[in-house]
Amino acid sequence: MNIDSNVGFDELKKGYKKEKNIFRCLFCEHQYLNGDIYSFDNRLVEASTAIELHMQEAHGSVFDVLISGNKKNTGLTSVQSELLTHFYSGISDKEIAAKTNTSQSTVRYQRFNLKEKARQAKVFLALFELMNEKSKEEHEFEIHAGATMVDERYMTSVEETQRIIETFFSSINPLVLKTFSPKEKKKLVILKVISEQFEKEKRYDEKEVNNILKSIYDDYATIRRYLIEYGFMERTQNCTEYWLK
Image 1 (cartoon, helix red, strand yellow):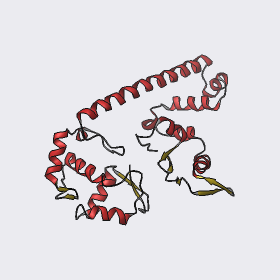
Image 2 (cartoon, one colour):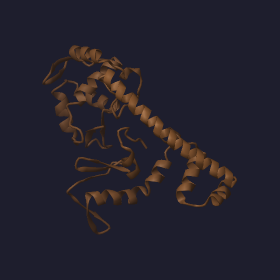
Image 3 (spheres, one colour):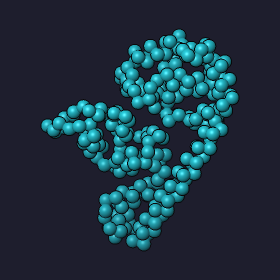
Image 4 (tube, one colour):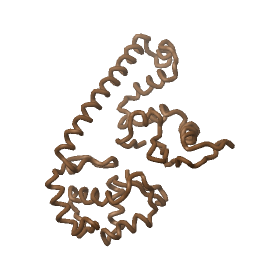
């Protein structure tokens, strides 16, 4: 499970995101186009209902999907995950104590600790967003949603970004790349500029992607590969569709 960092809290609770005219499942490739009609169990339904039915049939509850993630995704220990699952099921503290071989007072204490963890998470999220807002004032090159390896390479000043663009691109309109740098920081700036040639929330087939990249750089296959590898774009497993992350 790999959740896009741009997904909102309410969207995460629902398990899907509405992107313009598309309802997209956060946990798999399924998406439904607003205005189209879909068939579920001999019923014809609109996209907004289709995504809800898909969530139920394919994933059960959003809680179950999220709680099944590893500690890297949830930040929870195995004990905390087990307790949250019991709390979610609605059974009593006495029943939870029996299932976990602990006392009711221990269960109540753990419930309090989890509430504190939720409160602290809200404060941390506020601090993190304030930090990002400040960072955007100082750095033009912000971390893109699909970034796979976030480190100091992303901290590029406005002036440094502009120098890289002027050095490696012979033209901005139309966009033409002279050479593709092997240096990581420069590579990220170049890929970001190229990714901006694609429309957000639009799906492209491989031929369309190649045609756009061919006009920018001769070795379009390398650019396409790095756009995927560095998380600027994503594609289906059979490579029939590409889109910006």
